[in-house]
Amino acid sequence: MKRILLKLSGEALAGEKKRGFDEATCEKVALEVKALHDAGTEVAIVIGGGNFWRGRTSEKIDRTKADQIGMLATVMNCIYVSEIMRSVGLDTEIMTPFQVGAFTTLFSKDAAVSALSEGKVVFFAGGTGHPYFSTDTATVLRAIEIEADSILLAKAVDGVYTADPATDPTATRYDSLSIDEVVEKKLGVIDLTASILCMENHMPMVVFALFEEGGILHAAQGKDFKGTVITA
Image (cartoon, rainbow, N blue to C red; front, side):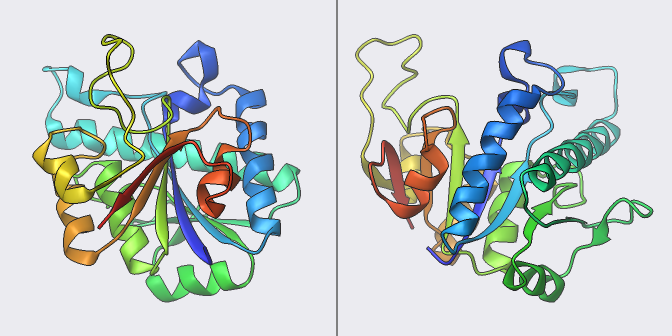
C-alpha cells in the first residue's frame, strides 16, 4: 500500500494501566510505524481519547462539552505519540480542524498530502472538530480526504469475530467480509456513520491486533497477516 491511515485506540496506548500513557507500548508502536514508513508507505494516524476521557458515560455534562473535552484528549495523545515517534527517527506533523495555538497546524487536504509526500507521519487530532461525531467517523473522513489506500484498525483482538470472543468461546474470526455485512450483522467494528462513509466512498479496512508482533507492518503488506479484511 502506498498510503494508509492507522487508527489507534487511546486505551491501547495506556497498556495495562488503562489510563494515561505507557511509554513502552507507545515506543513499540512507533518502531512498527517506522518499519512501515521505511518500507515506503506513507502513514497518517488518528488516535482516540479513551485513555483520558469517556464523556458519554456522564449524564451531568452537556454532550457538546463532553465531546469537546474528548477532542482535546485526542490532541494530547497525538502530541505525546508524535514525540515518541520523533525519538525513533520519524518526522511528524499534527493537524487539527481547529486552532490549538502553536501546538498543531490547521488541517487541509493539500497540506496533509504534501506533508505525507515529504515523508512525514501525519497525525489527525481533534476528531472532525464537531460534537456528535466519533473518532471512527474522523478516521474514515480523513482517509477519504487524503485518498488513502486503506484504513488499518488496530484493536485489542485479532480481527472481527462472529461474537465477542472474550465472552463467547464459540466465536470465530472472519478472514474477510464486506462493510455491508458489518452493518447488517451489527458487528460494531466502527460506528454506523463511519460505516456508511466507507460504503459510499469504497474505503476498505483491515482489522488486526495491535499487540501482535509486527502487526502493523503485516496488516499493511498482507504478509503473515492475522486479522480481518473488510471490503467496500
